[in-house]
Amino acid sequence: MKLRIKPGEILSSLWQRFAPSAVLCALIACWGIASDALYIFMSYNVPDACEEAMNYTGCGLAMGMLFATAMSCLCGRYRLPRFLPWIAAAAGAVTGLLLYHSADADMVATGIVLCCLALCFHGVSGKDAPALRLCRVCGWFCVVLGVSIVLWGALSLSASAFFALLMQDSAGDARRLVESIIPWLTFLLFAPWMFLGGLPGDETPSDQRTGLRKLIYLVMLPLYLVLLAVLLVYVAKIAVTFTMPVGVMNGYAIAALTLFVYFHLMLTGEENRLSKWFTHWGGLLLVPILAAQSVGVWMRVSAYGLTAPRLMGIVWTAMCLAVVLTALIRKRADWFFAAAAVVAILITCTPLNANRLSILNQEARLHGALTRAGMLSEQGEVIPNPEAADEDREIIYSSIDYLENEESAAGSLMEKIKAQLEAIAAENGISSYSTAAKELLLGFTEPGEIAQWTRHSYAFRGTARHDSLDTRGYAHAEWVSITQYTDSSVDAKSRYFDADVASVADYLEARRTDGEPICFTEPILLVIDDESADLAPLLSGALADGNTQQMPLDELLLPSGRKLHFQELEISNYAADGGLLTDYISFSGWLMTPDAE
Image (cartoon, rainbow, N blue to C red):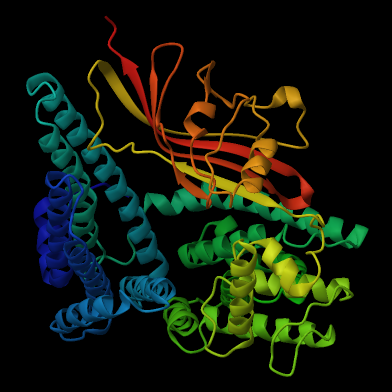
């Protein structure tokens, strides 16, 4: 592929074919620069209403650009009127605004993005030599990415040299603004304009070969065959040992299927021997891999039910399987991108979206397990049953763990369980999400967890802030976050701190409701750069009520003369998976170094 970058031709093609997208790219870059400038010059204290308006604007512009680009690509393939991308841009902007506060905003937005990308590929591939056109698109993307990275690096280096050598770091806000402008101009303006303007159009010769195509069948395809060989050996091992390690193979199998789709779309029509053999017969290598993967997924779903990622993986596997079958009958998969766009919308934006189907499946599993265990009252509330079968316990815990983070329908079984957990948490002074609350609700522990599950977590607040830090007498102030931990499986000599955090947490738990000042007589040592700091003076004097307290003192001088200025200090003791007691001390705040003199 000859690298011919002609700015005039690129700009001409951009404004002729992608004018709405180009305008919205420019607006997004301006929006990003204006947002950064506002944050920088207001010291990041932007009013909530202003921040909300900026977020609305960003969502609308981004979605409008996606819609406009997809419609422009379709117009190029199907000779549609050129005003349609402008209408699509307006529709996308409205969609982005409506999505901002919707319940399933993340999933719906993901589906729309995937749909638009699929439609873009469908449009630029064209009816004539689609594999060659897709190769040109991928090759051009790599060129644009490389040029953009070089441009970003050159501009960043030049800006850094200008402020460091000529301005001598006197213009802090100006420097931060310039550093924030460069990525917006490089990756949100230059890169999209260059990429869209260089996409192959109807006039692009369809028989023009690209260097990327050679790279695919000379380098990438042989490496892919190595991956298939590893997977086939693993499948043979499964067949010989008759054991299926659940959840191990699925990711590699999906990667192999995805790469097969990529190679089939890129190499169809290639005349060299390896590519021709692979596009005709390569799908046979995936048959045993697909069979083993299907068994593994079925076992996983049977044991733990559906989740949104698991369901999306199943749908994607089905689409890849359709491409494999298309290849085996020696047909081109020209339908793939259009089908992918439809499927992306179906599993994200309709009532049968992945989240909804997964919630329905998990609620059905939970209801069935509770019913079998005799744990549902006539009012639909959960009754503790210490004698529940282990199989039902696993289903109950896994379903509750999944559903407690999802939006359940009003009046559903999970909504009642959440209400019961909140009541238990309020009565016992624990979190409704904790395992302890679930044990009290259900009457049994989760299989594999320890019976006596405890968690003590206490936070002490300081006043460390970037806008109120007194740096007189200090040459350098660095914001640090330090976590030091241990667990019961580690030898005592391997501990990162000297304090017995379990004992400290137990002491705090015992004094939690006393309302009297805490007093520590033993040191609690935090180790920073091989020097120890005793935290006991900071904690002594704090009241014992509640889990979060203001520190009476929030500055601590280290032996070297450096000073710690605290924002938050947390001490926790909890039971991790498998029953290992894990303790940790977590600190965040400023580490200040004094003047050398």
